[in-house]
Image (tube, rainbow, N blue to C red; front, top):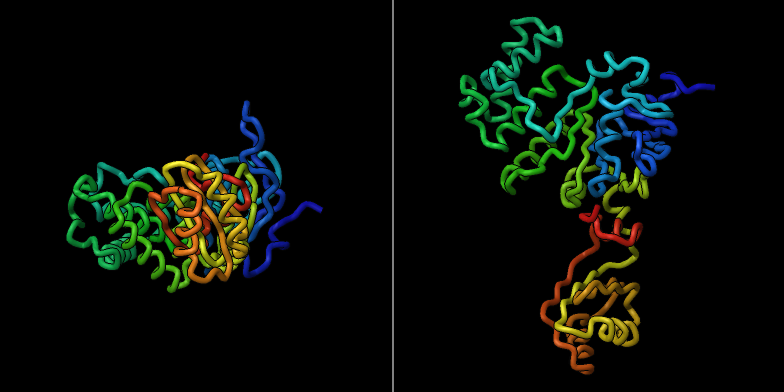
Length: 325
């Protein structure tokens, strides 16, 4: 039986069934049979390198991309059968600045409300309210050209939630922003979520997914490799300590020596003049590494110790770094 809206669980604001997308002339699929659900009221992240399929997946859910096969539902509505309805209940913030350059900051909000059928008085009230909430009142009558990158991004988020969407979609929301603007936007999204807004974001910033998301789907080559809370995903690694070592030469010799001399090591990986190791329960790890390196006359140029991250999970799943395409 073909799935329909009645099969979508009440608590699942987004659901996909065997969702696939094949672009003409493309080797492999941009989306390869995705089956996943986004719960109402959560911040859900799609994490992966460029080309993983994140933007295509978001494009299907926001009706900009037509799937090759499978089904996708937003708030129980089939996106392929009823795209206009899905647009009405979605808020979208894309990677590009899509503000109307011919309108003021306030007008960008007001006319968005009017386009969604909101009465003039309510649109005026809502525009004033959102500008205050997003600390943009000072620029209300200014051209959008007067806004910094961070302020423009906040205005796009304000516009996206103007009509109280069921889901707020954000595609790489902090790409190109300075660290201060990125943190400000994180705080803003957290506040919106606390107020009940469901958020789905795509990102290749592991820290962003870790800090913001209730659950994360790690994607690569159109498939979901793992899906869980950030904490549970990091537990998949099995290690509690990660060590990165740069040496002048002899990385392979050092890897072999450390593996033999430190039974706590779970995995080791050599890339050029760098060595990455994962350990569990190692005591006095750094001085023992230094002593072993000195015993074979290998000079350590740099040594860093960290906890497992979502990038560690990705490397373990794919054998490559998250920032690689």
